Amino acid sequence: MTSLPRFAPMLATPGTLPAPAADDQWAYEVKQDGQRAVVYLPGDGSVELRARSGTDITAAYPDLTALGAALGGVPAVLDGEIVALDGQGRSDFERLQSRMGLSGSPAKAAHMAERVPAHLVLFDALHLRGASLVPLPYSERRAALEALGLDGPRWSTPAVVVGHGAQALDMTREAGLEGLVAKRLSSVYEPGVRARTWIKIRHARTVDVIVGGWVPGRGRLGGLPGALLVGERHEGGLRYAGSVGTGWSDAERTTLAELLRVAAVGTCPFDEVPQVAGARWVLPRLVGEVRYATRTRAGKLRHPSWHRLRPDLAPDDLG
Image (cartoon, rainbow, N blue to C red; front, side, top):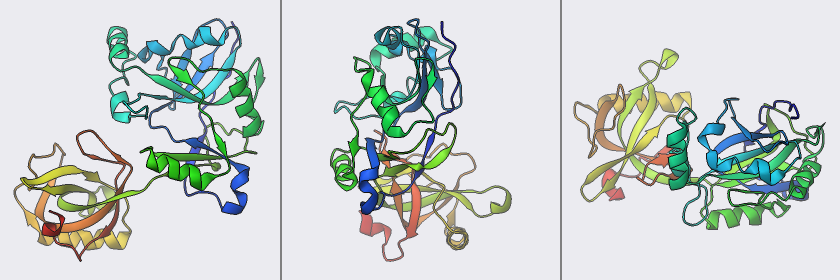
């Protein structure tokens, strides 16, 4: 059995598409919405999966263990993302959540593997046949990965697009995907580093919401909003849409604090009281615009970020 070196995964920096003049120097991959995994394949048919934190998550995904036999006797360390696919073949993080955290419960993990199959999307090769590939450019590592031919029932090596970033981004938007990861063709693999040579580009969706509550911040933010609790108007009332905890400047946070203070009430304005510790309620009259990535099946906003107040809108305008 070959002893394999350990790697922390390289991370992408949030950003925008590279400049058009440099477009042909970048490869574009579909951004997956799952659990990052470094995959250790010693060449004896076994598989070990390690999360971004380094935690061993192999037992949570028994449906991925056949990858070791598929690769045969080739020792390798690969980088990828474990996803659960929806009916349209798109990664669905909410579905995957039922598979996560089951490493200590093999029986439950096996049961859930039948109900919600996992799929491993492979996108990089870090070590192969006893040699480290991390000093090589992305283009060479990618060629080595594709040469392994790892496309099976529970794993795949999706194609990448070189250049044509704007078109690729448009295609992912039309397909309802989360976005792209742009990787410079000449980039080396930097374990554990959030590098500018990998850029993640999410589609920015926006929605107008009504503020129904808030949670005080901690430390220097004591007395100021640490998060806003927001909702969306519907015919029967105000449906809770989630908690927004990022996106303000210090000046905006101070302005919001004063608006929340004068709007304070003792009862929750949402249809159902959110289970949020320390929540304080306000009259549902402040309207704001929020950016978000996707929604859960229950309609909650995922990765929301405050964009701006909308003093030009009243709650009734959103009905």
